[in-house]
Length: 449
Image 1 (cartoon, rainbow, N blue to C red):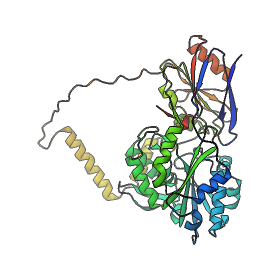
Image 2 (cartoon, rainbow, N blue to C red):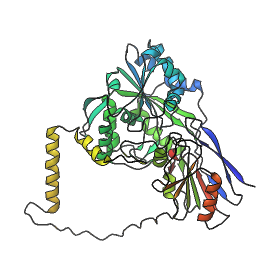
Image 3 (cartoon, helix red, strand yellow):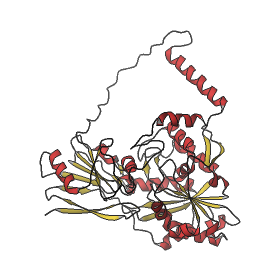
Image 4 (tube, rainbow, N blue to C red):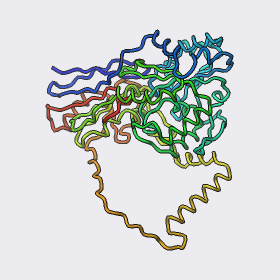
């Protein structure tokens, strides 16, 4: 008799249960997160009424005429609709009707979502009663200043014109800053040129790293203050994308505590020598782009001979990322991206950059006398690279959909039949029936240690 395990798939559109049948000889270990019970509506209201380090929103918003709510986009699992309804009541208590509230979905450099996804993100109430806009990173931005890191800040014009900005977002692991959330919500409302510059200038600190102080986050925190994003409602979800924890107020006072919670709640062991590693891309499985960017992290830690499987609905097809395109890289993407960043510079900054590069090249070739300097470097033992994986990543597309996906794509091969996945694993593992299987049920939220 086969063993069945139930996960979740198809974020936003269905959030439907996903039953996977395994052969009886397989030993299946599932790394479930350790999250608290789901929040009630009353608990959400209580959180909004008791913000950290600030007066309640209904007091902060009094006398404001252009309030704006910045919401993280559909590629983040934050159930914004559950938060927006009580938030609108808080603003109404301050004398601001929903018709006067603007909601900007902070898309950042991500592709334009399907209208249905947008509606599911903000909810029917907010969509029908408020002005809902999707941020366009390629136009309709304005410059509001420059950070101490030299980053010119071009932000959505609606955000710049608002007199009270509230953020709604979650704290999820990523490679750029370790964790998102807090000030990083501001990045979603910036010009594509600024988004690219921030990523290229600071690089990444690694997925789910412990530290919350790094140049990228320091730069983006300056930007958040520049656009007056000081009140943020921060959410955590469980493996089913249900709201389990909420904080509100001055994120600078509570951000570190919330990152510590996320790390602890979603901590999981690495797969070690497991024969089969299964990574569920829910709740970030809207597109192939984000399945690749967020859903395969555990597979990178699999043993060389392991079978590697990622699960995802990819309801919105291929998806897109404007800075790091995954599926179809636009023609001359790197050159266009570089020209965009150059366009942010003043003539003086361009001249300084050119002089700096010439000077750097001169000094790298020799000292000021023209003599080449040789430095003796003590020999150290080189770290052995992990052996390359023998098997490709198999994407089990959990939803039959008319949008075709390219296969293979960057080492990922598409399969739409679970039984075919099982047969492929048997072949890769030499026909064995005593396989050790490790499953990560919500890989985009999980941190491996």
